[in-house]
Image 1 (spheres, rainbow over the protein chains, first blue to last red):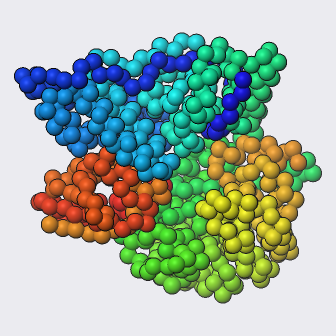
Image 2 (cartoon, each protein chain N blue to C red; image 1 turned 120 degrees about the vertical axis):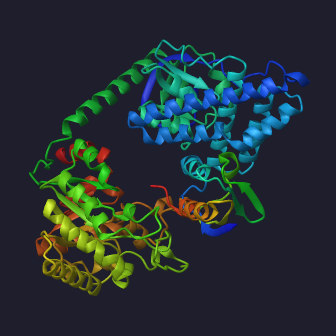
Length: 539
Length: 85
């Protein structure tokens, strides 16, 4: 029997079915007596402390093993367990002679119902969170932990109504082959956990799940999003073959991490990483990055109430320059607009921030923002191979103005006796205007980098956050491809490098097109690097 | 009493990790702190109460009463406006 759901974590698995006996704990008593109140309140506080302590321990463990996102889930749970409003609501009920194990469930349910009523995928997931945490406190009060998951000793496919982070964290390493849940979406915690653990998962199967709970064996395809209960021998063999092939592919990809990728004809394509902060540099090098095709500088400017100083920026740029040594690092100057607040810069309210005062437009108008950034880049360049790239350029005037300011900064630094390095300047090609004027821009640039995400959005006039416009959100559109071709031809005529740093750069189906159009560098999130190198090597 | 209006920054609104971070920061102040959105006013030290209160781009007011009210309002307003990365 086949069930379909949402493919939440890629991969396939086949194995024995495991149905944990969980569900909400049933309170042992509903009521207490007047003289028990003080003691029960004390027990409630102790249970909260124990549960919060356990959750906090799990968060620490996940953080140490590098699972930052999952650690965040448990930190959120710690705050829920220790919530002052939860405590006061439970205390009030206990004061009215309700048992604490019943009270904490009831209060949890009130919050859960409130979130569920918001009719928002994220809030529905938060309802599961609060039920999970209050369920743990209640179980603790009754002297039982939920141990079904810990007890699992045979590698199995786990089938359940829903799976809480505390459930998945309790499963011993290697014991979960796959997850199948009736509830959930791609953004549920179970989906996030499954992806980070590399375990296939199908969620949101619906009430149909009931019908397969009795199965002996279950096959899961987490990419396509379906489940087969008690598959026949042929299907089992097919799943085992696919699962083996995927494992082999993972091993094969590892071999590509540190190769210098060339096509069969011998065209060398550099594969670089997109970085959001200097702390990601070491990881990127491990994945095989041959440089940084896009170093975003926005992180330096966010979550603070003043602008970062030149020295502070110098430190950050120096760190990434040192980490990459001779390998090129392209630093993009600040690219924010009215969709994000910037401390100390009056942006005003814009109706269309993506068509507004952003990127180079803002930088050119705001010397107190632009100059310290350029000075910091020039100074940091002595520590490595830094290049600077200007975002949102729409005409040659902007490039000339930006280069003039860079020159002026260099002169100032030199007259101040500061050490400055060589810095090539390039343009991010992300407005259709820049692509159309690529010939002119190429004459004054050392390199181009095509930002396909914005180029697609601006060329096709399709907001990239709008789900209804999926059809118009790919670089694989004749108009976009024509602009990429034009950019590559201009770069080639001027003898300069041309890279791509949008999502398309890491998509296996787009890489052959981009290489064919004449792109010489691809920059992507670091984990995509090995696959990209493999795809290039097979061209 | 101190108060400041600000705009919610995180892409998914107030919940999850940004909410946990916010509440942790709020608990660091001795003042009583509330977040006000429209006619709703909730305890800023309660992750359960602030969860789902506002979406990205919503205007909220942070209000505090106590010894470190000024500082609480300033820090928390910045935090809620910050985008998650």
